[in-house]
Length: 85
Image (cartoon, rainbow, N blue to C red; front, side):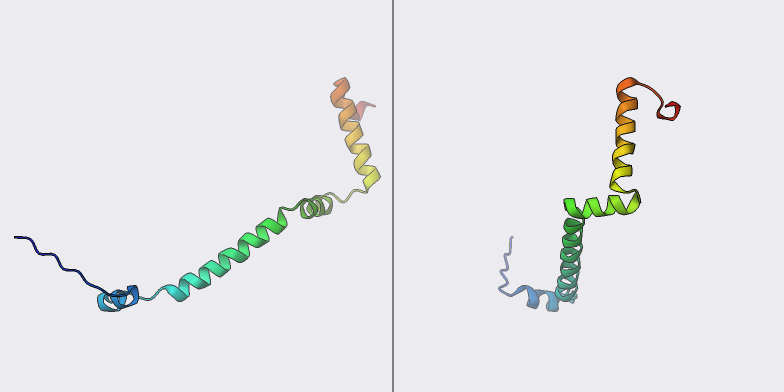
């Protein structure tokens, strides 16, 4: 013998009937926080933001940065130690 019962109710009614908590406010708060974090991550990965971070880490002037890069390129090209020059 087989019985089939169809219950027509909304998700809210089913949650209340089964005694489950309503997690919609928590889910909305978490989604808002996740969206904010994602926006901050995207903004931090823009080319302008990355350059600002890099130049704040290395407190060299532009000329000093060019000299350092030139020295590294020269030593790599000629396979020499830049300290010996």
